[in-house]
Image (tube, rainbow, N blue to C red; front, side, top):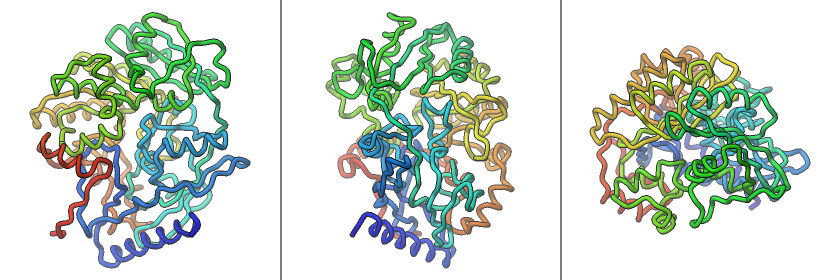
Length: 474
């Protein structure tokens, strides 16, 4: 069979399962096989629809610059395929295991987001299975409300089975300039000023209260005699450590980075979250140990270990978008109350139509603040800490990216998002009786019990996919 024929067969099977669940009014989860959520996920036989086979690229048009991509294609596979045609997606999330469907539904962005928005903004059309099992197309011109609504909806409006993704011309390198800053105020101002200029990539890191770096990148085919840095080899330094030392030595320095190395520069060590695992294991954190333990500190492996050990409630992992005008206030809160550093700063083009997007904010520029750190092992204190962050973010007009732990009450949640619009959309497209709503999907309603020994055993048994509980549904 051709790829298209196999796709049609697999999608018809998904339609059949969803149609049966709709007839019986059974709620379904969608099983992708992997996840970049930090919530602990459980899948029981008979309570989910499996779309993990939808992991193919059906076509790439070099002339018209688009790709037809199934939802479970990871970003590294997608990028390899498009680069063969001299093309690339406009927004490529920083972790290679993030899938296109996950990027669309989860509101993923990266350092080109100040220019293009989220991953979903690069998608021209979706093929989707509705809650009644019907297969439809959604675009800005057809079922437009579903097209805009499904972005950042975490699969609660329908199942994406194919996306038409717009592509841009690719180049060999990213010429990256490092500009040091003396604190959050200078960083936010420089990010905003840079977003008005002709760059291709912008992000920043605050290493401490008084030191950080803003990085701006331009695509190029010529390294222009600049030094070339790579970040994929075990002998390479983790990017954030390199950025700190390079910017200290060269406050206005530049270098060239091969395109793929740049786009996935934060993969090794998951930004800087990996260093906390060294601390927990009482292993020295140095270049030798990072080299020796390199296979364990790529994000695909780190996510699986996080899930199998149930350790996610021992680490703060939040991305919160703020209007530019209130970003400083949140950074000051983090500094004074939590003293968490480094912080990631990412400027994002505000959403215009996507009401569930974290960048649906009333400002000319949104800035995402990534707050990632080890935390207390006391579950109640951990929940309290996250609840405090949620309250501060809400008061400052911020919105969380909901891959992370969310502890809002239902009432609090729907004061942030448009419940009437959302429920009408779910009803119109038959989602109400089949798919959990976004609050149910993203809210953490229980405490997890960490278990390193059991987690490592589960990881050995299933190193790459989330296992399925074969016990019968209650």
